[in-house]
Image (cartoon, rainbow over all chains, first blue to last red; front, side, top):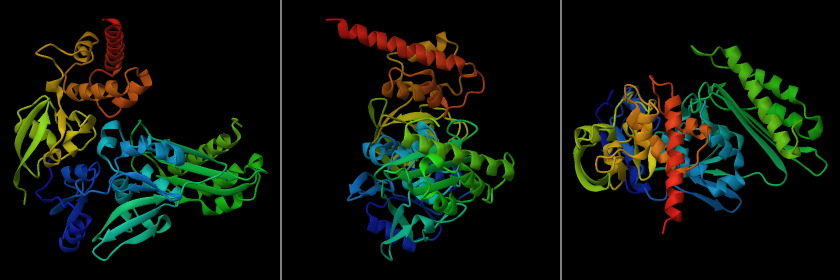
Length: 290
Length: 167
C-alpha cells in the first residue's frame, strides 16, 4: 500500500526541529525510514506531519570525545559498521551490526532511529544497554541525558518525550584486558532475531573477573541485563567461570510468545545465546576454545 | 497535505529535473514520473528487495525512501546497466546461468549484485548469499543467481587483469 497523506517538513537546523516538535500534533520524525516507512506504507501509522531530519547538519558522524565515543543519531548503520573507531574501541558493537537488517537497509537505516523505534529484537539499542550508553536528547525544553537503564520504557517505547529528539548516543569503551561475545539466532540472515545475547568480561592480572556485563535481547519487551549474575561472576576466577549461574538467570526472564515461537522456546534460546556469548568472551580472553 | 516540489538529481548519468509529490516514494516516482518501469514494486514495505536501486553508490530500497529525499543524489537503476543496448557482463551471466524465471525480482537482484561486486570484486559464495538475503526470488531457488554472480566476478577480474597487462 501507499502511505496516507501527510505534510512533509524538512527542517535545516536543530532549533527548527525543536520548534516543529513543540508545535505540531501527530508528528513523526523521519530518520532512515527503514521502520517508519514500512509502518506508514502498511498504514499501521498515519502521522499528519512527517519531519525529515536528514538535512540537519551535525546529527551524523562518529567521533571521540575524551574517553567517550559519540555516535550521532543520524549516523547510517553502514557507517557504524565500517567505522575504524568502532572497530578499534567498540568491537562488540561491530560484531552486532553485521546482523542488522540487510545491506540495502543499512544504507539508509540509522543508529539513532533504531534506538528510538526500540524493536525488542533490535541489536543496536540492545548493545547500548550492554555498554551502559547515554542518550543525549534535545528539544524546546533543552538538552538532557538519559542513561541506558532508563531509556527503555517498554515495547517500542523510549524515554523520549513527544517534543524531544535524540541527538547522539555516547558510549564509554571498556579498557584493559576484556573479552566479548555476541550471538543471535534468526530464522534467516537479516531477519529480526528470535533471541540474542552479548557478554563482556574484564579480568585483572590474576585472572579474577573484575567486571561483567550480560545482556539478552528479543526475549523480553526490552533488552535485559542479568545484574545478579554479573555481580556473582565478579571476584571469581576466569578458569572457574560459572556458566550455570548465568543460564539459570536467563531462564528467569519473562519471555514473550508469538505465533512462531513459544515463551518457553524463546527463554531456552535466550539462555543458549548468553551461554555461547559468555564462552566466546572467555575464549576471547584466553585465546583458547575451552 | 502533500504538495508538489521540483527536485534536481542524476539518473543513470543524466541530470534530471522531476516534479515529485512529497507523499510519493522513490520507486513509484521512478516508474510513473521518470518513466523508468524497470524498477519493480513488490511488497512496498522493505522486505522483498525488488525495488532496489543504487543511490550515491549504495544499494537502497526505493519503496522506503521518499522521492523528495532524492534531491541532489546520483541514482542508478536497471535501465543504466546495459551499454548502448548491449547487456552488461552480469546481465549476460544471468541469462547464461538461468538466474531468472519470471523476472520480477531480477532488477532488484541485479542492482544488489552490481553494488556487491563494486565493493567486493572477489566474493565468496557466502558473501553472495548474505548480500542476496535482502532480495526474495520465488522461482529459481537462488542457485543460478549465485552461480551467475560468481561467474561475473571471475570474468570481471580476468578482464581487469588483461586490461592491466595490455599496453
